[in-house]
Image (tube, rainbow over all chains, first blue to last red; front, top):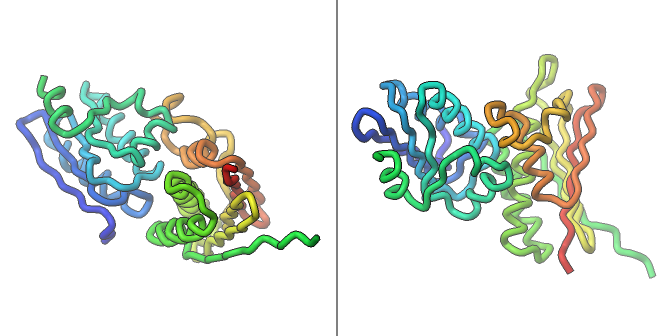
Length: 117
Length: 142
């Protein structure tokens, strides 16, 4: 078990799931993130809000995991929405151009406001 | 006047994901010796992490997964060179340089793209006989 990352998971209603990642999201724990995300989405939820306000580091493997979840949700009309990415983590989204793929929000409340409609 | 030879630091890590963090921590410690800004140090950490993750993830049939990854830091006067070497057969260089936005449903190979964006130089040598060496350079701003 990797202890450099804490994963929080909760749901809101029938459409929204929230995944909170605190610590380092990287090659050693990306599979845990994928599994937690898939478990949250197993009930057919459309939106996965990923709260990165507590994430201090993310590598491209962690990023690829979020892309995989996003792709899965897009097939059913949903999406992954990113909340609270700090500058160091935001940088890898910028470098890879994934800010054009994900909707990015300042914080969790702004992201939830948007997906609640 | 003789030029001082660059100092070197080498570490070996097992070719497993949980040890990539060790290489990252070493990269931070070495980069701190060279008066890089904290933002550059974090870029170097990410680049080393990506190179080591590539070595871990691109294990192919026939690779010896018990091999180590060798990470070498070469501290020059004006630059830090880093080499990440493994004895694997390497990866598809064509695929590895694409940005995610170009092809976001195929995120594999992002690591080299990220390294290229963060570092001043990147060279990759893949040789099935000897393995793969990712060499990158970060120059000190004057």
